[in-house]
Length: 358
Image (cartoon, rainbow, N blue to C red):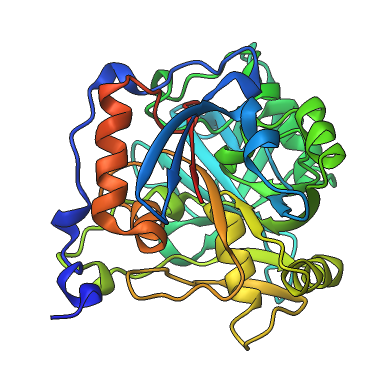
């Protein structure tokens, strides 16, 4: 039986995590996070810190980061007609077709809202700061909505939106500090409903030291959607329907990757989002500029064409993210590393510690 076939059961991607190891707050020092260093060559584990990366990575390596910017996409308010509480999540802006300009939002409220209904959005102080009109339905149970003013989603969400923290962080409750800390220092392109969390550990100072040591940097963009965190509900991982997310690999990044590999350097992906973007752009063989929606699902047996190493956070059980890192390093090695991290009381998930798969 092949390894890929034998590791197809979702039950094999499960583990028990003490609740008190789920990080509820970010560290004040981003680069002070612990780093579990897994060397695939011999399976060894080493306990380091993110700030040690300049001593671990090599001159000539290329660090590829995701420059997506998290928007304050969680919106709350009330139904204008009934006064009933309403909560939603901005997913994206429709850019083409008859619905161009409409917001795609997930929403929950009591009762059954009707098309044409108006929703009043409130800011953190409870003041009405914007309105939305529900104008139709989108795929996946989402709504199409149009704001009551001619303004960009970024402008409106900056006024009334909240940081869309995962529910395992304080039940999703935002604090003022989250606006800065749930954002990478290299975030540029607005569009994510969640942070590419491996990138949260980097500081301008750490990036400068890496550059001085001969480690260059390139960017890709992948706008993280909620599907990233959705558990696999199928019995077999390959029966899971992979979500699609918009991503882009610029021509200059593709060129940097080709040049790095040509001179014997390594491509270090910062986060699973960078892995999926780079490998999507490499589907034709050699990496090339690419943009569009990717549904690339990396499972055991997948051979990376571009990525050599990965810096990543610790992932939830029974998710495509855990399957991805297991595909790169081997399921038993990854679960063994997770068990070691639990014994050593590493901090898990979005605001938690990191892992280097080398």
